[in-house]
Image 1 (cartoon, rainbow, N blue to C red):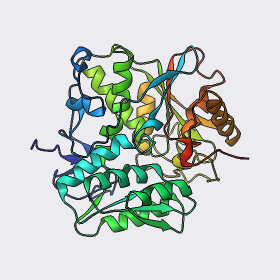
Image 2: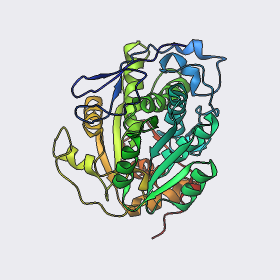
Image 3: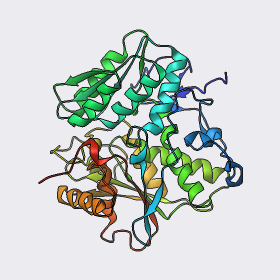
Image 4: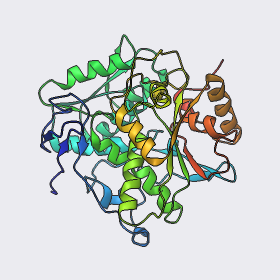
Length: 368
């Protein structure tokens, strides 16, 4: 079995052995990164490989998957002359979170824990529950009150134990982290565990392959905890360093105006979150994160790419969901925020891809 790369704290450099169940930096308690700088395979060598995200095996910190459900390789379809949508809601559990969840389940199998715990607003919990079921690992998912009933049903159907916390998304995370400190517990955190980011980066590797070895001028990303955007930044860096990209795209990050701590920090020119922001109800429950642990990394990734932050109103979200449905694409309300942000001309003719991250069946229509 190939040795696993070590994890480390990007803030203070403390290294965590690959076989440790530690889920955060023991000093600052922040999320971890992975000491892993792979070289992607050239485009021509991908032909004939397995039709899943594991075709990009050179870029993944784990190999020889045993719990794969065929995740990845989602379609890319045009919405306008310059904007295309990647249909990540067609993943096995109906959201992009499968990209990272499969790596966490593979990693958990190696650790042989007594149980796996996770926290989520819905989709990550569903993905972790599904892949733990595939791996025959006992799983508990912590979720906030108000999580979509369909997401709760899906998690429970996979055999995971539900712990609905009387509080918001942050309260669910705090409960999971407390449970994660129990002995022989694997914390399958899509925020703190860097393996998740190395799964989500395959979104961009797939785009690069499907577009013939290039990327659009702009990648538009929904941002709550930032796992898709940070994964995209990893992939872009890998492809550029290998000489497989001649130009790096700008990263445009989208938040709901009702919960937009990163967009506010961006407007203030800050390198990290400066203060607590007001939190209002939003259709975009999946990105309603008032204090994302990787905020500093997200802001830096957008800044380094020459990108920007956009916010969308609840009316924009609702109308974008109906607009996509009228085009044959039924997407959950969180998953339409990128289209909501750019569908009325914000791109100014630049080529772009938006991710449609979750299926509409997970939450239903956003109703006024």
